[in-house]
Structure formats: structure tokens, C-alpha cells
Amino acid sequence: MRVVVIMNTPLGHIGGATIHTLSVLSNLGECQIYLVMPFKYQLLSEAISELRNFNKLPSLFIVAYKDVAPSKKNLVGLIPLYLARLIKSIIAILRIYTTLSKKKHDKTLIISSTHFPHDILPAFLLRFLMRSQGKLIVYFHGKPMSNESILHRASSFLCILMLRKGIIDLAFAINKDILKELLSLSSNRVRIALTTNGAPGRHAKCCELNDFIKREYDLVFLGGMSIPKGALDLLKALAIIVRKRPQTKLLIIGEVPSCFIKLINKMKLQDNVEIVGPTYGPLKFRLLSNSKILVFPSYKETWGITILEAILSGCLVIAYDLKVYREIFNGSLLTVPVGQYKELASIILRILTYVDKQKIDELAKLLEMMKERCVKLMERYAWEKVASYELKRIKELFHR
Image (cartoon, rainbow, N blue to C red; front, side, top):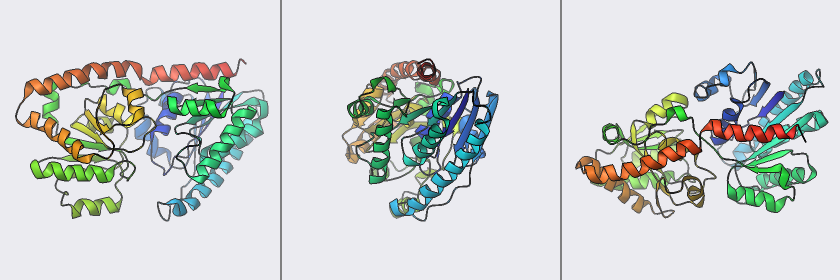
């Protein structure tokens, strides 16, 4: 079997959709894989190093193209970026098709890692060119017709139309809300399946009291700093905490735009914040395993792979109370109402006070409760288990 994967991630960083796709690919076994992406293979090296089987794939072809830098990180500034990616990935698809068409008897699996235009349009083109020899799979990591830009709504409308017409052979919804919306928009239930994210089990390190107390960083934030991810609330909460506990240390693992660096300096938090930038693979998990509490005040998430990775690294997690977390994590994190950064700061201070004043009983009780839930999450969301389910559904496509 040949597999062509389009992974034009939003700004070239490695997010949940990319990690999910790579993790499933690493379990495919004997096949030819073509990856179309807007960044060099070297950027992926750290991310894929945590995937046991990825580098053992017998035939892996990276079709990477040179990306362009956005003039501004807003809709207007991103239009040239997305257009360039779309054109370059279509050219890459045509090159791949030329190669694949020489062996017409072989089946081809086409994977669009998201339902966004820069992924779905090149995937649709290859599906059209391959005709009956190709099967198209699309991952929906967000609601297709809700809370999105006009451009994404147009792309979503195309996806729904493709589902109804049978052009998309299988759609994976990443949570129950997305599944519900897909089912309401398309009557073809056979082509829609619920899936989930996961985390590599070998990095799992559930909360242990002695280890927790010795961790270097009090707080950690994982991901790109932005308003929707709660970056302002994070800094406001940190300012409150530092006034009462000046030695508090926050580690930021991810991209920090210059506007937030200026804000950190303006709030006089530069001595309390350490920035390591985007980090992947084993190093990311080592940093998480050296941090006590993941603070994740995001206003909108479709799953929360960051939270799972933190829990499986032995971090306590404090986040805003989003509906999707109740579905996925079932009480495995501490939550406060959305936007209540003062309450966020209060809970963090209470936990750090347990550490400072050696209130072992209170801390041990909290960690033991989280440890039990960590073990259950480890079993439920192992990438091998997720990949096994998806591959079963994929294989069914070729036997219909």
C-alpha cells in the first residue's frame, strides 16, 4: 500500500494534528509513505524520535518545500503564506502522482491531517486523479462549521459536500462534539468515526511525592503563547503569585511572540520566567518531568494533548473548566471557571505552600489521587491503542 500524507500545519510548528498523524503512521508497517509538509525533515527529527517505529518504516519519502514567512500573524498577513503553501503542496502532489501512476494496480491511501484548505484541497486533487485507486481520509480536529473563519467555513462546507458525495472515504472526529456535528451535517454515518489523541507510554511518569518536591520549575506552560491559549491570564496569575512568593519560577516551552516578552518585562516578571522555545521529543518530556504544575488557561481546545503529556510526566495540571476536558480527562486535572485567573493563582499558591511548608499529608493525598488517574489515562490513551483502532477502520476501506 502507498500512503500520501498532507501536513500543512498552521504556522509550521508541530501541533496536536501533526503528532497524531505521525503517531498513526509509525504503526502502519509495510508500506510506502510520502509526507508533504512545509518544513524541513530536520525540524521533525526530535518529534518523531519518540515514535518507536517511525524511523524503521521501509519506504519513507519526505516531500518538503521551502516555506514563506508571514508578513503579519493575522488573517491578512497569513493569506500569502497559505496561498504559497497551497500552490507548493499541489505541485508536490502532482510530482507524487507522476510517480504513483506508474504502478496503477496499487491502492493509495490519501490522508489529510486536518480539514483546513491547505490540507484538504491538495488531498482532494490527488483523490480525483487516483479515482478508484485512492481512498481519502480526513481528520477533523475542530468543529467543521462552528467558531471558525469564513475561509475555514468554506473549506468545511467543501468537506461536508465531499462526505455526502462519497469523495471522503473516512472522516475521523477527534471528540464527541465534532462527531455530533459531522453526523448532523452528513447522513453517511458509515464514513464517520470517533477517534482520540494519545501520548507515548514510555515517557509516562506519574506523580511521586519525593520526585515532585525536588522538581526545579514550579510552573510550566507548554505551547505557543497567544490570547486564545490564555497567555495574558497566565502572566496576570503569575504576577499575583510572585507578589506572595517571589521565588516562583515559570518555564515556557514554546514560541513566545515579542509582544509577550515586552509584557513580561513590563510586569517585571523576567526573573521569574525562563523561555526555552519550541521543544519536541524526549527533551520536551524531560522538561515537563522537571516541573511541578502545568498551568494551561486556554479558552478553547478540541482535545488537550498538552494536558495529557503533562499528566503522564507527573505534573499536576490546573486549567480552565472546558467541556472537552470532562469528556477526555474525567477529573484528572484541577479546574477553575474560564477567565478566573485570580482563582487560578489562588490554587497554585495553595499547592506551592504545601511544598514550601512541607505539608506532606495534604500534598501526598493530592498526588496519590492524581497518580491513580494518571495510570488509567496511560492505559486508555496509549498511541499504540489509538493507532490500532484507526488502522482497523482504514483496512475496512479496502474491503468494502
